[in-house]
Image 1: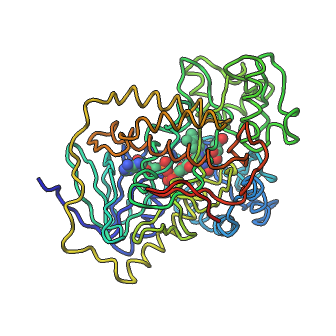
Image 2 (image 1 turned 60 degrees about the vertical axis):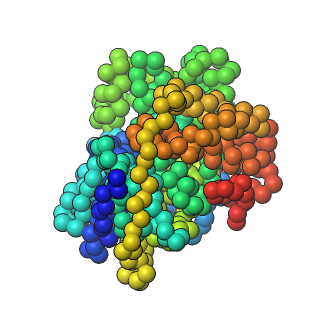
Length: 524
Ligand code: FAD
Ligand code: SIN
C-alpha cells in the first residue's frame, strides 16, 4: 500500500527553541508544519535550567561575550558564527521579552547571574531555574498566533526524502502508519543525542535522530567527537539523573569529595567556575582517587531562603528524593549533556543538501567549538533559528523549490525485525558509550567500542516501524560516528580528552568530518 501524502511549504522537524523560532520566522511566508516526536513540551529546551547568556547588562559588552565563548571553545570555534551569536543575541532576547518572556528582575532591572567560564554576570533566568520552560511557553504562544503553522505531535520522522540531490520531504511514523510529507524546504531541529550515553541529563527524546537521519541522506557531519559532560547531576540510585544547574556554583555552591574536602582550587585557577570540561575531569579524578561513585555539591553555607527562591525546581525535585539541598550536601556526578558537533551548516543553516536546513543542537555552525560556553545554547536556538528560517524562505522564494508532481512513494517501513532484543541492545550500547567513549577516551577503549558497534552494524540499516526500534538504529549510527571521530582526533581539545594523547595533537585546529560511505576525515 502506498503511504498517504501530505504537502506543505515548510516542514520543521522539532518543537524546541530552534524549531519554534524557525517556524515563527517562516509563518508569514507559507504553510509550516512542525513535527514533534513526543508531546510538544518534551524537549531539552523545556528542561533548561541555568538560563540564557546575553550581553545585555550594564557591566557587559558583546565583545566580552565573544571572547568568553571563543576561550571556552578552546581554539575551535568558527569566529564568524560566534560574532553572529553575540551580536544578534541581544535583539532576539529583546524580541522574546516583547512577546511576553518574563525573565527574573531585581526591581525593574533584569537580573543576571554568573556561570562557569563567563567573565561577567550575563545569564538571564526565569522563575529561578525554569528558564527553558519560560522560553518554550512564549514561543509556543507566539507560534499559535499564526494560522499558517500547524503541528503533528507524536510524529516520528524516520527518514528524509531526497530526490535528485534535493530534500523534498520526510517519511514520518504517526500512530501505526507511515506518511510521506513533502515540502519545498525541510528544517531539522531535532536537538541532541545525550541518550546515547547511560548517564545523561537529556530527556528521552534526545536520541540523535536528526543526526542519523541526515547522515543516511548524505549530509556532512562535523566535530562529532565533542560531547560535553555536565559536571553535576544528581547521583542517587533512587532518583532520576537530574541536572543541578551550574548556576548553583555561580551563586556560591562548592564541590567537595566524599571526604568533605574542597578540591577544585587544586585543579583550576577558576575553581568551581572553571570551564565545564575541566570541572568534569576534576570530579572524575576525585571519584577515582577516593574510590567513590560521586562527589558532593555543597550549598549548606548559603542562605536557605535564597536557595529555595533561586532554585525552586531543583529544591523541590531533590526534596522528592529526601534530599534537602539547604541542609545537606548533594551527591553529584557528571553526565552527557550536549553535543557540540552535528549536521554541518553555514551561518544561515544551509546543509550540503539542497532544500535541507538545520538549526539548534542538531546543527553545527561551529559556534561552540570544542566546548560550549554555558547557557549559549538557548541563545543559539533563537539566533540561528531565526537566521535559518530567513534562509529557508529565501531558498523557496528563489524558485527551483517546487515539490515535484511525481513524488515518490517514499520509504514505507517494512516492520520491526523481531530477532533483535531492542531494549537489551540499547542498554548495552549506552553503557559501552559511557565506559569507552565517555569523559576520558583512548585508542584501546575506542577500538573496543568500534568493534562492538561494527559487529552490530546491520541494525543501522534495518527498517523499523516503532519508536524504540528506530531510535536504537539512530543511536547506533550516532555512537559509531562519535567513536570514529574520536579515534581520528589523536589529541585532547576542549571536551574531547584522550588519555593516550594529552596534548593537542596533529591537525588540532581542523574539524573532523563524516559522510555516508566515507571514512572520517579532516576539514578546515
Ligand atoms: P530540543 O529542545 O531538544 O527539541 C528537539 C525537538 O525535536 C523536540 O520537539 C523533539 O520532539 C523533536 N524530535 C526529535 N527527534 C524527532 C523525530 N525523529 N521526529 C520528530 N521530532 C523529533 N542550554 C542553555 O543555553 N541554558 C541552559 O540553562 C540549559 N540547561 C539545560 C538543562 C538540561 C537538563 C538540558 C538537557 C539541556 C540544557 N541546555 C541548556 C541545553 C539546551 O537546553 C539545548 O541545547 C537546547 O534546548 C536544544 O534546543 P533544540 O531546539 O535544538 O532541541
Ligand atoms: C545548567 O544550568 O547548568 C545548564 C546550562 C547549560 O547547559 O548551558
